[in-house]
Length: 147
Image 1 (tube, rainbow, N blue to C red):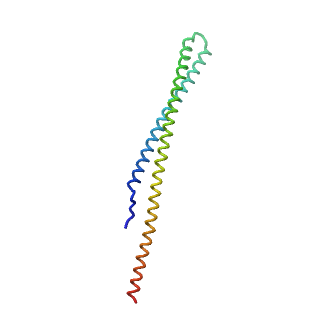
Image 2 (image 1 turned 120 degrees about the vertical axis):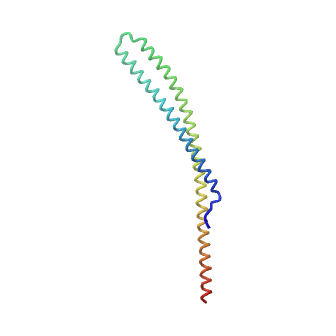
Image 3 (image 1 turned 90 degrees about the vertical axis):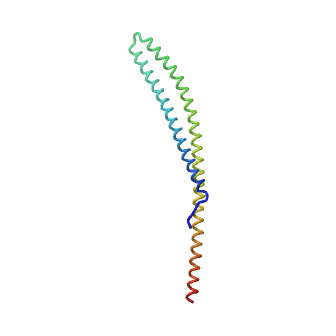
């Protein structure tokens, strides 16, 4: 007699759900990283523009239009950075939501896995008792035959 877990389909389904939640979470993390990289790039562009403005000020001369252009770029870039930071915050919320879904799916799977293990242990104990009974019966039959 073989062990058959009656809720094997449920266990398999929960594993599939956990795998899907893991994929969704990884996708959300990838999007977050992409948006954070874009934000870092924007910040680096500000630093580069400030360095260009500083070098133009040191050179002096008729650099007024170039400085104005850099100043306008910096103002616009700061606005774009604020918008990007807002997007990053929204995606961080999504990532946390997906993390919670993944945690719950993993917990559900672990619970079913534990139920399966408990059922298997019960099966082993019952099987041991059954085997012992059979061995006892055989011993009794042998004893009766010999006497």
